[in-house]
Length: 61
Image (cartoon, rainbow, N blue to C red):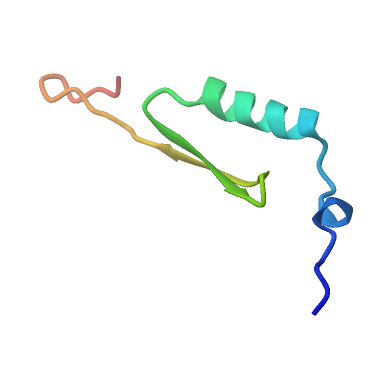
């Protein structure tokens, strides 16, 4: 079995990945950002955002 050269299949530069992570962090107010890594490469960025409501007035925070 031959091993696949992952560097040839990765079309995103390190700068593009860093910008995507920074954007995900800047745009989130409440929640989490998860970075998924395979073979020392970022393959996925997940952003889970929560919407919170003030119990007294019913307005979004």
